[in-house]
Amino acid sequence: MLARFANMSDVPLSYAQREFAMSLRAFLGDPALKAATLKRVRDRWEARQITPLIYLKWSADSDFASLAGVIAETRDPRTFVERTGIPVELALLCETLINAGISFVDDKDAPFGFVMRGDDAIWSFGIEWLDAVAVDDDVSDVVPRFLPAFLARILSDDFPLSAHIAPGVRAAAQEIVRLWTRELRGEAIARQEWRSARASALRASETSSDPEGYLVAELVESLPWPLAGIATEFPVICQKFLHAYLHSLAAPLLPTQDQADRIDGLAGARTLSHARGEARFADASDADILDHFPQIKRATLAARQPEAMARMDDAIHRARPRITPFLREQMDRLLTLMRRTPE
Image 1: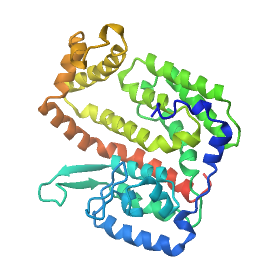
Image 2: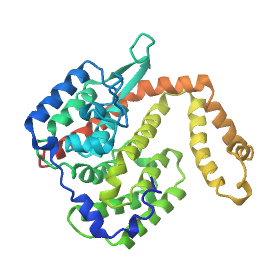
Image 3: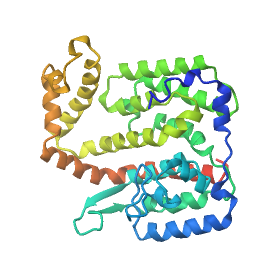
Image 4: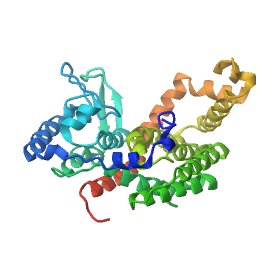
């Protein structure tokens, strides 16, 4: 993701502002198109014939399709926008939140080899968000306006991982929120301010020392870019964060040794990442590098054992209800923005 935006600071601000200001017309301004789309999608969604994924999936030759794919009957992002007048990042963000709240359980008798289980509060959002988009509205501002609120929620005192967020990471995140808020007020942010924010976020992430806080540090490290650019990347960033967050919520349900191995594994992944940049390991494989870190190697191999993986899968399944309130909170925030309801 960072590579894609490597030159963002060299793009004239007027370009970023024009991209942010691109005008879209939801459902192409046609009430009949919205009604037909809702009916087609609702029929398949309520029959559980659509799989909430994190990318566009659709084919005329297969029934296996994602929600966004079915909405526009395409797997091409550009075509999605052309057929719906809705930003693809908004559709994928909504679907990503649903995906995080659904369990996929193996079932050899099911059409696709699995069945989907989840709270009704999660399933209902699949139609709620699409219905919330008003005909002819330009909802290209929804994800940009959602971003500061999402990050502020992560920084709140009652977020379950609050105690694990390093002070430097918190300060870097707060600065990102301030810059985004200024952008939304129409201020032009100097390139140097974004460069400084990125440097602070990277430094804070690299120096954070609590493995349980790594997922927030990595989230913050990925975000200090102007809203016009980062909004399009956010569904992928959000999915990575939610995946790690769900594992964190599942951890207390694991046996004690598995919990210890998980912490060693988190710390080990960071050590391995740093080691890859050292000259002495320039030509070494990950396996060779791990030979220099016996504790990390043991934890890594332990987590890969079939029995340990099965225990983690079971813990994740049992922990999924714990993430449901957080997911629903984000869904409701998106609905508020789409409905233009005063907060």
